Length: 183
Image (tube, rainbow, N blue to C red; front, top):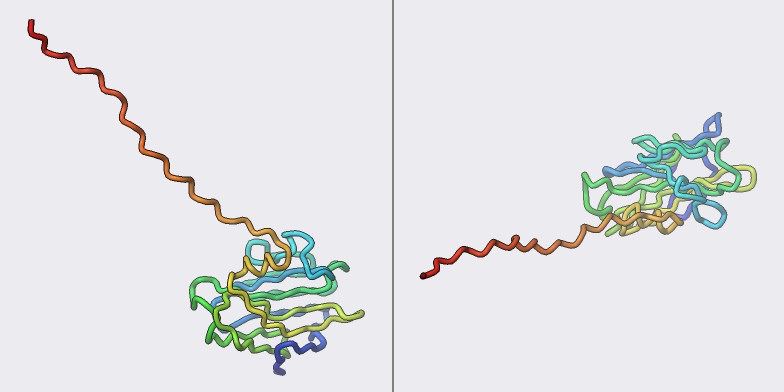
């Protein structure tokens, strides 16, 4: 296994069918992929492939990682950014976590230097001429997958705000008590 350093690029180790699998280990994470155009943005929200949208053009999510079939990636998609975000069952941040991206059977990228981040763009699989390359990124985000998604052009719905408390209803008026008249 060969290790990548942050910022390093290498030919993508594609299998005979033109596919590559990327996994991220070291903490309980949700792995996802963003299909990006030359502008570094998604074409639509459907270009985020993750557990709630497990299949995109040329990209398939699995609990242990993401598989990219380069033959199925649309021509306008130049980069597939592979991300990982904490799933809430482990540490609160990546600080001190030995996070590692494994790219195909041959490459590994230890992501070091993370502190307060809760999500990270680990690696990118990108077009270079007629071939595909892999870039070790390791860019962390403090605001989780929502922060990464927003940075690449996805609109993240804010959780619905709780309705304001309603004032307590006044008790219904009571009929006037019949008085005891002296008479």
